[in-house]
Image (tube, rainbow, N blue to C red; front, side):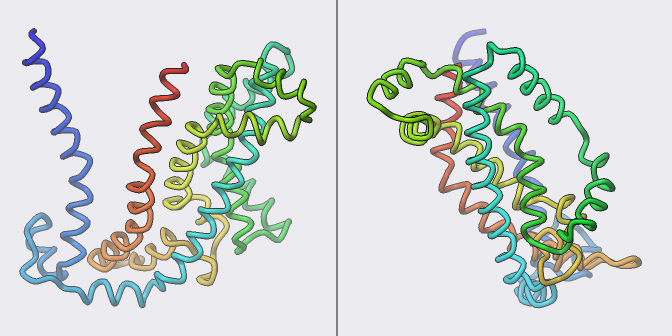
Length: 275
C-alpha cells in the first residue's frame, strides 16, 4: 500500500470516528429545540421551529445557574486538590521507586484503579452519614478527588522518573530544602502532565453523577448532572427539556476544553517523547 492510499484510508477512518463521536451531540441539540410531538414523530428530523422555551423552562425547573455554580466549585477545588496531592505523592514514589516499600505503594495505587466504584457506594454512604458529610460540597469534593487520585499519581510517577536527578542535586548544593526543590524546580517541569490531569479531572468532576448521587440529596447543593435528573419521573420523562439542560451544562466544559486543547496536545506529546 502506497503512502497516498494509506493517507486517504486514514482520513476516511478518522472521519468515521469523528462522526460517531459527534453524533450524540447533534442528536442532543436537535432534541433540545423540539416539542414532544416532533420528538415522537422522528428523533433525527430537524425541528420545524426553534423552541427556545425549552431552554428557559429547563433553566427555571432545574435551577441550572445555581447548580452550575455548585459544579464550578466542586470541579475547581477537586482538580486543585488532586494536582497538589498527586504531584507530591507521584514525586515521592517516583524518586524512591527502587525501594521495596514504595513499589508496594505503586502496586496499591494500581489495584485501587481497578476497584469498581459501585462496590464502594454503600460503605461510602454509611461513612459520610456518620461523619456528617452528606449534602455538603466538601464531602463530594473529597470523594471525587479521592477516586481520581490513583490515576493522577500514576501519571506523575511515570513523568517524574524521566526527570534527571542532577537538577535536584544542583539545587541542594545551592542550599534549597526539599519543599523549595519540589515547588521551584520539580513542579514547573511537571507542567505537561499537570495540564493533562487538570483537563481530564475537570471533565470527570463536571460530569460526575455517581459520587453526587451518593452525597448530594438536597437541591441547594446539587450539581448540574444531578439537577438534570429532575426531568425523569417514575412514569414519564421530558426528554426535550432534559436535553436542553444537558446542552447548557456542556457549554462551560466545552469552552474550558477548547481553551486547553493546545496544552493537552503538548502534554501528550511531551509525555510520549519522554516515555
